[in-house]
Image (tube, rainbow, N blue to C red; front, side, top):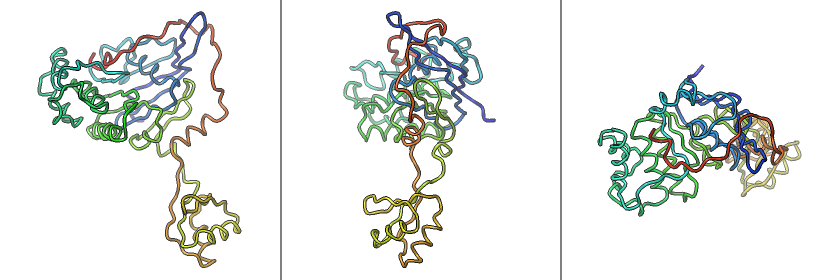
Length: 327
């Protein structure tokens, strides 16, 4: 069984507001194996950030068990935090300082040699812009500098909470490339996001949650499952569609192509060839993570009423910036 760098069992968080209770995390089981990128996926308000804050000791769990690198947290958090970097919510840097100056301030505050600033800047591809003032950075550059800050202590686990929020396509690609590079260097990355199609491009495994509870978890390939349709390109798609439909296949049109339901490509090929139609393209079509998520959440209630008597309650905490990153 692979080593788990993050594990929760029956994790639960209840907030109280004006005498009423709200369950933000509902008996959540999360298992993140060592190595690669693990997506922590769900819509806004599904409990992702609350779970991350509990793991980092920024919020108290109502009940359940949490462990990082096999060590119980929050009790053993001081022992494991040197191995953990995190970017939670908006990073806080001095706007009039350069990127390098901001990192030097952080590195010296935690006793890290200046040489690691150079390494961190190179890892996030900011070496050429480290002399620019932070206030002139694009949003994507600011996010990459926040990641660089977490890398100063060379963590084995990096937790990123919605790192592509508000970014344009170029910024999203930059963050994606940075995450891939980190995973390739041996860092385990927990990537929290509600943008399922984007995350699919970078994650090795994933946990999908809804209303604070686990809906599915495992390797991305397993979550996507086998192909349930094939994309067909023909010289005469109209005639091909009639032949396939007459043979009992369910056929849909999409941008001049045919989408044929079923997982047997040989049957599609044989049916068309017997009628004198020859394939220019035949490729499996697999559902994406967004489709998987919609299927998992179909029929679920849109919300939950008050859950009273669940244990100790507390109010939501304020934002943390980089509080969890450099402990």
